[in-house]
Length: 278
Image (cartoon, rainbow, N blue to C red; front, top):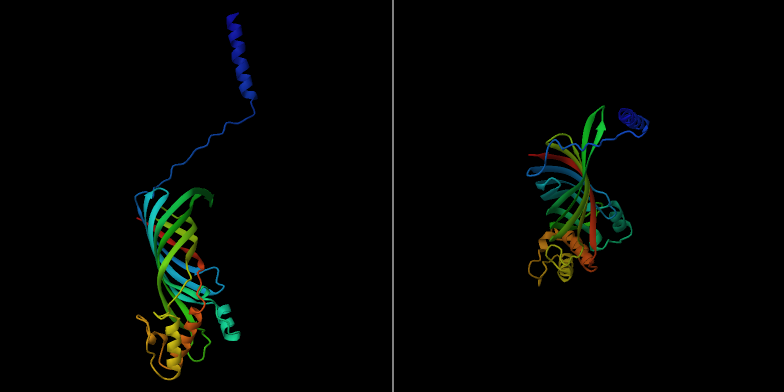
């Protein structure tokens, strides 16, 4: 009797197991085949401004990073903008409407150096090309540093001077970035990102000269003379050759300095490049 009861229980359990329609799912978390922690990374980028309403910037950049942890790195980068000019809209307003943008709208980046941190909170994989695994990572970065700036004084269409610039010195700059990394292997990575460079548009001197200095230079050059009584650090010759060129440039600087702005400029750049882990 006991044998019969035991056999019934075993058969009943087996039948119930076979009748269960729900499959068993097993999720496996694959360990990364390599680590970034404790390694250096060297990156090179090409970049271009994506909000070129009043200014146009195109340049190159290089960054070096040390990965403190798998998803956290300290980085230092430098940017150079060989193309940093007013946009066609700004030049057209100046040429046809005699309307110059405010100093904040005419501010141009020439060089920049920043140090900061990069966090990669999202890491994933894609199955592509019949079983090939593509590894991806989304990251955020932030940095602080200094930038060399300038303003454009005359448009490219000016028959007397052509496109000319005035130096506005160094100023603090901050950046925020959002990007995507594609790991092509243990060492090579392709990167694309959007980087927002934020800096103050306030300017009180051009070529070391304040508005009063610029006005004196404009008058003196119009009369074929050298300006006197300039403030310390003001470089009259930085405005160009004596005569009409210096007069026009000093006059443009005077107009820009007459409308100082405390605005914060957001220069948003798209960057694409490659990185090498070592």
